[in-house]
Image (cartoon, rainbow, N blue to C red; front, side, top):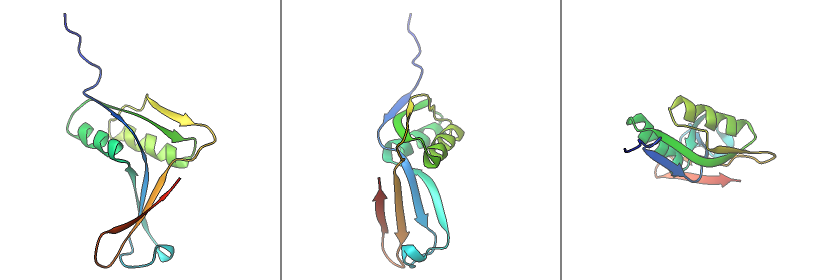
Length: 112
């Protein structure tokens, strides 16, 4: 007898929040509006795979903070199992910030 696996995909690795300035060409410090999304390649793969109908779980950790709350909420809404995501008490979740220049690629910056 063959047993069915619980998940089609288990991702392992970084997750965080990506925060992008919506003011194209403006210095980041002068930004007036931002777009927030879940970031980290494994986490983005988990979301995309779930949207394609796969049963997905993420194995990672987030801080015990509002950014961690945002990530867990977004993953759950996207259908990604969050049972294997640890909450690290007293730690902050990673945040990547980016600004779009008037021409050229996004200029990223990471915060621990």
